[in-house]
Length: 324
Image 1 (tube, rainbow, N blue to C red):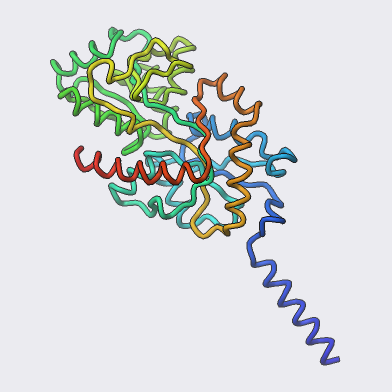
Image 2 (cartoon, rainbow, N blue to C red):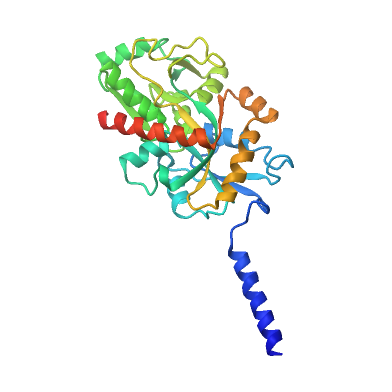
């Protein structure tokens, strides 16, 4: 009887311990995977995250669906603070990342995360910042808006998705490059709310994502004056000049890279499974077609490429933000 109880007790302990161990690669994933988005529903990150995860449940992909969990606030800080401090590191809760956003915020301080808090999995897009104005704005070129701002310091208001996100960085660079005084207004609700402020005429203009601006321009709601990148976007806005073409020293530091990451401490075998499957998911024909239809630039990068990109952006942003 004692032997039987010992055997039963040992089995119970083993079963309990087994249940506490994160799923290994051959079992993972065995249930749906969450994706936290640190911005509100309807913005570019949310819109694209829903597209790039749409085939996750396919048998030749992860074999389990992904669902979106919106945690907006403070330009992404609310969601990334939660993800760094509270999300389980078991592979069943991922997060969308936005670079330069979370890296710039960690450099400026006051948050619970840095690049060392997360493990990148793969990148799905690179979305440049653009300068937009309402469709009925008197400005048809970036030069006209800048000239007015120089003559009327503080009279040009520009909405954006938050502080030290790509939009804000582009605004800081534009102000430094032009010697004009703009008033940058971070809006609650991310890029979608910032674009609504432009369309409604609540601000002179805005700095937003190319993808959001493309859809708003297609609907006839805004005019896109310039792109904050090294080259024009020939796919979606071939007639819109870069800020550098217009004569302003604004590079691509504000380009919004988007992808998926997991918390530090996630089992390596789970990371390896995701790193193998997720890029293929992003490159799926259904995904690429939907992204193109939505004016969303696709740029798929694997884990190693994202690690190198994060490191480079950390270096670039530390230097840039010190100067600004």
